[in-house]
Image (cartoon, rainbow, N blue to C red; front, side, top):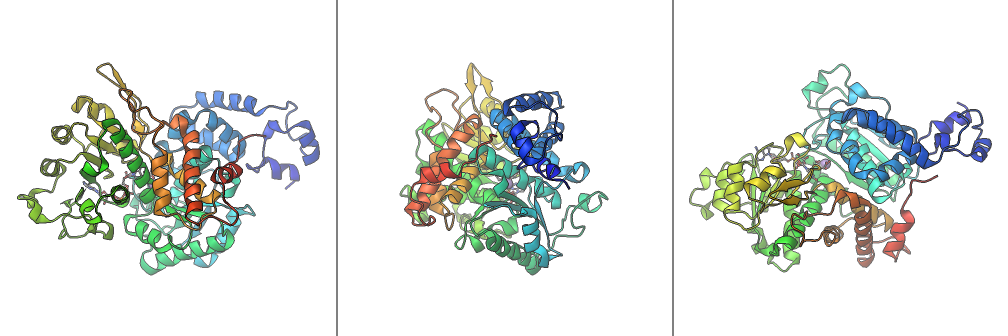
Length: 541
Ligand SMILES: NC(=O)c1ccc[n+]([C@@H]2O[C@H](COP(=O)([O-])OP(=O)(O)OC[C@H]3O[C@@H](n4cnc5c(N)ncnc54)[C@H](O)[C@@H]3O)[C@@H](O)[C@H]2O)c1
Ligand SMILES: O=C(O)C[C@H](O)C(=O)O
Ligand SMILES: [Mn+2]
């Protein structure tokens, strides 16, 4: 390949018509581009106008991915200008459609690493090849067993790693050439994929047990050797593996599980925001977690840790939690409990009708929760009956239906507001338009981990932190407060995505500061703000 093509086909280097005459001369690009030299803004205007001609949803996403694949600087410049409009297209919910259609619309691998459970000797080589000499500081890895709420998507799930990284750069400013998306292809139990002749991943059932964990460990060790400073961000692993993997590595190296920890932080931040509006205390709340899986238990643990930090007795604090899963309210003797659930189960003797507490409405009637969070993947589960029953026993019910994507949400905010006569304090996983109700405009906060993981990851990387620990996560949750005016009627419980870059910087700084304060930061890193500013990449020529 000629030198010109090496540059124009490299999305990290390519400026297209943005190369100046001088650069064209130096780089051997004379004659390889039309004469006009465009500014980044001119390119962005033209690209945005094209974007606007595309049908909504997946076609728009495919168009934006074409720009991403061609010129990262232009892509992120444009995304910076249209963050609220682009987030749902680049990321959740449209990303779910791109994952479901991955094999049908595949164009190119987007610099991701595809590591196979059947070829474990080549895991290190695979990482090295995909990085291609780039200085990797951040890896988002998925085995795609639990993509959002849509289940097992095999190799298609690589898109969630790519998409999460796109948000990292847009929100925090990590250099897009320093990130790596990784697919751990363990096979898939999704019959639709196994039957699809176009499916691009390993066509067999998921490997489990030793073979599976050997692959994960080879990946982790190879990543540590090749990129010793990199943070490993785990995304959308299945319920049986997510916490096991996190617990295995979290004290040894900088790792982060977004579904457990990121979701925990954003839910805690949302609850703190809601309590700031209702002027109630955290330690007075009763929490009902509907869907006590990876995310649900991450949330329960994070809320619990905060109660203890606020002075609650560690044993007494557990009494504030009620977990509901497929079995109904979880009791100490419920069959099939996960290790995470076990800590927060209830005693049957607390209730006269314990055996009847197998559905959400009965549990809400028996418990009178003040906070209800949905991570159940059960669309419409927060019914009018359930919500009205909850609202009958608390002045400002806090209800977060945060299952993703849109088709799985437990309730829509407009209904929650109507059913509670405007008393609800709500937030959703997907972006939702403002709701008008009886003359008040309700802003709906987005309780999606995207509002916080970029800051956590970037702060940890900037500080070169040895690990990501509870104190850093708590600092992140608290940093999201104070941006919304709680006295405004209809105020959201979380800051708006329009300010994503601004509050991500704040989160990054407090996380880096926490690492410094705890003596976990890299050598010579003493100034959190400077460390964050120094690492920040900007989309410019
Ligand atoms: N908003 C966010 O930032 C965010 C973050 C992570 C996950 N999520 C969403 O949360 C949902 C769950 O994700 P996860 O990773 O925890 O999945 P998971 O599979 O680990 O957990 C889901 C849990 O729901 C339970 N469940 C299934 N059917 C149920 C029913 N009828 N009643 C009660 N519980 C039921 C399952 O048994 C499981 O324990 C997904 O939709 C995901 O998109 C949102
Ligand atoms: O990807 C998202 O939108 C949030 C979360 O990580 C999820 O799994 O749903
Ligand atoms: Mn996720």
